[in-house]
Amino acid sequence: MVIAFVAGATGYTGREVVAALAARGAAAVAHVRPESSRLPEWRERFAALGARVDATAWQPDAMAATLAALRPTHVFALLGTTRARAAAAVRAGGPAADYEAVDYGLSVLLLRAAAACGSRPRFVYLSSLGAGGTGGNAYIRARNRVEAELRASGLPFLIVRPSFITGDDREESRPGERVGAAALDWGTRLLGALGARRLRDRFRPRTGRELAASIVRLALEGREGVVEAEQL
Ligand SMILES: NC(=O)c1ccc[n+]([C@@H]2O[C@H](COP(=O)([O-])OP(=O)(O)OC[C@H]3O[C@@H](n4cnc5c(N)ncnc54)[C@H](OP(=O)(O)O)[C@@H]3O)[C@@H](O)[C@H]2O)c1
Image 1 (cartoon, rainbow, N blue to C red):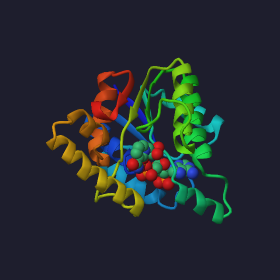
Image 2 (cartoon, rainbow, N blue to C red):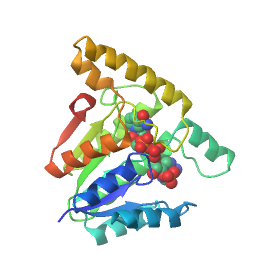
Image 3 (cartoon, protein in one colour):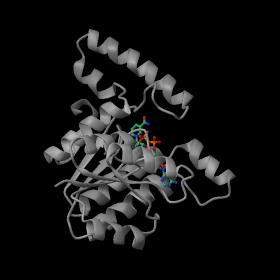
């Protein structure tokens, strides 16, 4: 029986991962942060998919206790912030919510809880194209550090490094990302027409649903290690 805990379940990719897991008959637990103003709405949406919502606080002891009780077979880390969201958190006077605090901090908090929970779950981490080297900007550095801690954790793992994740069905308006993805989409079609299929598959933007279907298939097949964008 697959028991999957999904962090970042409310995200553009995460909600589709929960849907894909539930459609495959997995016991899917969708994590929603307890302070979310949309918690009642998410409870309804995920219940309609056949998934359960968990609203454990992002605190090490609380997350460790939740995973120890659940004993998941799979833990999905699909969360991350944006520079705009991090700036909005500062303006609102809340705690830091930048790449260091969210993309690195919360992913690693989840990883440590998973490593200690006793069921040795497969840890599925949604990283990014460009991760895996050294250096990079704050966004890539956060991913490199999570990947390094995941490799050292002793857990079986799957790291997925996609290009842009976007589509008309994304609720949040991200004008810069949309323009970049549209240019990339056009460019990759041209590459495909010219026969450069590997490059096309590496940079082609994917929708959340498309990416989720690949992630869930690979995770449930027991795929291990790193999956680059062109392998999705
Ligand atoms: N977008 C891209 O083109 C792209 C490309 C490659 C990799 N990625 C990475 O892939 C992952 C998923 O991307 P996505 O576009 O599906 O994500 P998304 O739609 O932006 O969703 C982000 C998720 O992270 C949660 N989150 C954000 N800030 C948080 C905070 N301070 N505390 C707790 N939870 C927080 C959100 O919860 P709430 O709903 O409660 O805010 C949501 O569940 C991210 O790590 C992203 O960086 C994205």
